[in-house]
Amino acid sequence: MKDLTQLVYILQIISLVVGLTAIAGVMINYLKRDDVRGTYLESHFNWQIRTFWWLLAGLVVGWLLSLVLVGFLILGLLYIWYIYRIVKGWLALSDRKGLDDALL
Image (cartoon, rainbow, N blue to C red; front, side, top):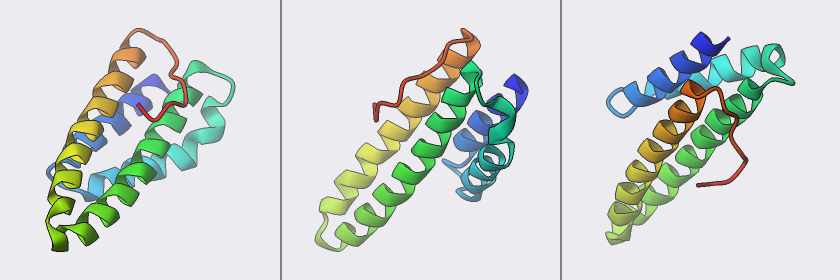
């Protein structure tokens, strides 16, 4: 299951260029969530799912506010936040550590 968790992080990275891969990643998370319940990988699945939904919400807000230009700042910060979440999660996974539920 660790390989599957890594695959989702890879799909998240690819989504920086091809956004649809993030949807594939979160689908994997939801479909295999029961298989990781009670393990440190469960925290990674939760992390990846929350990252997806917060990203989606941020994209909607940023896109709507881009009409008044402040949205471009939000989208730029969101891009950095998304990369941070992927890197932090993947590093914890490589150390076989769980993650907390924090937004950062």
